[in-house]
Image 1 (tube, helix red, strand yellow):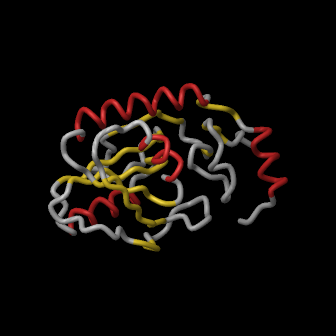
Image 2 (spheres, one colour):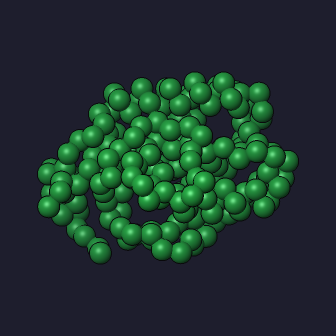
Length: 184
């Protein structure tokens, strides 16, 4: 479904704000502290999952003051839709992954199929360890078996959420707060 900028603005005007920018920033600080404690001495590669992970990764990386490398990957199940399908790779990481500690940063952990496929691929490439960090974890019982994030910023209701990297039909990734579409 393609929408106009005006329709996206109407959705935002009617949306419920779940987490303010201040709450998001506090969550990012907490995540950075936990990541530093766990990975600070491991010379990790931080992998941003495009496109949703770009906002949380950017904010998180400025809070990490230890040596690390940055790369990205682009794998999606949504491709502009509201429901996920088969995993589609647009770009795999360019840095050598074998023997390295990796931190995958994404916007949200929903059902977990995308994250599970990414982690599986990274392990198949010979990574020594693979960690994951998500700004938001959606609360529901539909999670893929055995998939959890190692570092979680906030939890969100089981609703269509956007902001802080998460989009509404391609719009609103840039918002500094997390919103939910108003229930019909």
